[in-house]
Length: 361
Ligand SMILES: Nc1nc2c(ncn2[C@@H]2O[C@H](COP(=O)(O)OP(=O)(O)OP(=O)(O)O)[C@@H](O)[C@H]2O)c(=O)[nH]1
Ligand SMILES: [Mg+2]
Image (cartoon, rainbow, N blue to C red; front, side, top):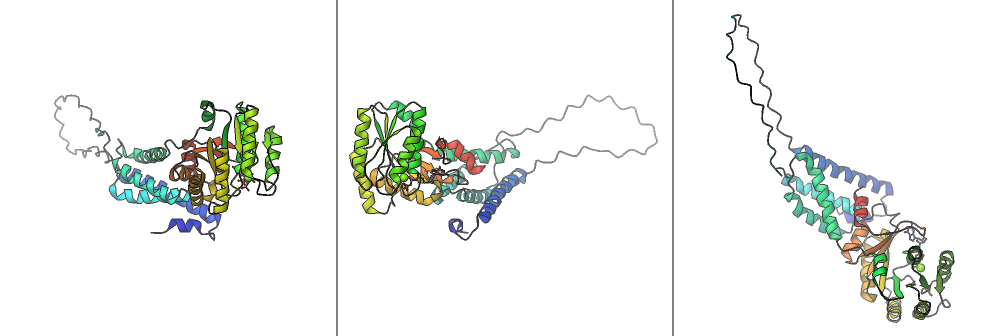
């Protein structure tokens, strides 16, 4: 069995090759489905009886008057009479798993879906063979949907249903995943919904990080609380919350420095910010292009500070979006938003159906 995981990670494979193999895989899956459709052709209709012309010259006897022939009854289609040839199920499952892996669905999640489909495919019963491919597709969609059940976090609704003010939200993740951009976009979205925010410049570590957040604040007309570069990030969060309380703001959005989940010093520092800010919600921001790595990161951040939900960014640059499925399922945390571009409006609430369509489009 080819190790697809390794193949997909081979840096020497060109994007064109990957694209080609992805197209080929999809074509294979389609061919497999088409074959299922053709597999068992309906019995050809019985040939109409043709009698050879009589050469007899004798005048034919006056035929006895025959009763009108009863119309041939339509062959009855047994309800749910067709099922997939068990020998084809294995091929179909294999192709399915490959398509999922090519769409950046993590191996453990692809395998789980394959197992689920292995249970579902033999149970498919349709009235006509031509309905099999559609039935397979809808089973798959329902399998993915049930994997994602309860895996979306409705941030806007959360804000409306929570009475406490201000609500503090801390954003965590490795370097460059889009934390600061996401904070700016959430502030923008909340402003449009009529909620006020304060931004805490908690990345006191990277040069230019405070300035970056201040620029967003200026553009959006949102207050940024900051200290000197290199200062204590927990103190910045504390001051921002204090400011929001006194000004009756709805939200405090705490930016934090990007850090590798393996850097124990920086993870300890994050735990300190967490203790001081005591956020109502901690959001892990992951780069959808990171694939399986993002799952690992999310798990580690969860261990360190307790993650409540995720935002997956750069979905616009991720061809298929399977990473969202993996994060939502494998990490067991709901996805709040997807980042789909670099603009302030390019943040959309996570919708499992949108993602399913993208994987199989
Ligand atoms: N295409 C695209 N780019 C994005 C998206 N989100 C963020 N970016 C870009 O990713 C880059 C990094 O974004 P930042 O918000 O600075 O990331 P960060 O996690 O705050 O980075 P550090 O603070 O250095 O850890 C920027 O160039 C953003 O414009 C997205 O959804 N799509
Ligand atoms: Mg940042």
